[in-house]
Length: 252
Ligand SMILES: [Zn+2]
Image (cartoon, rainbow, N blue to C red; front, side, top):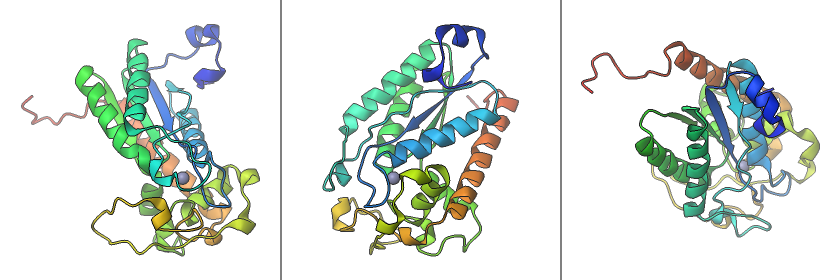
């Protein structure tokens, strides 16, 4: 048992010695006509729990259920924190973790709008507590596409909000909450090397981008597998060198 919200005080004190914590950061936002509002929270939280089953001493913190989703707010019924609010929430949670003696924090992000707030919050905490180690998987939807062999996905390398990849991982993790008969999206016309700061309604009228109709549970299981392996291996490698990543030539 590594899930803080399900533990008693007795179990925490007498349980494993936790030296690391993992924080899922999700959202509550429209995910097309076919995926649940909690998709980003469910994926990041379920991945976090699976990671904790495979490494020693990793405490699973309660997920942040509402993220920065202002650019998805044109679709009903999206909830959003302001960016500054999410930064403050993340900093407060990380400060509590550090004050409880855990100095290694892994952030499992589930949503694009959280990336910038996570970066700012993590940088602030690192300045405040230089001895703390903070790592983050910012965009599992990109990482999974990079780790899987080319051709795994049929459209847009699986990308998209509620697209082929995200719908596939949902089918692998919480199929009972998905209505595939309503899965439809569009591949947006976006440049390759430059990022446009869009509002999501400018890209699609279905609440989804990419092609969710190509999603399968088999593709999703492969995504879960490569992501788990990558994060578990990262944590084991870092544990083996006590999270010391400074190079031998470092002058500091
Ligand atoms: Zn999502």
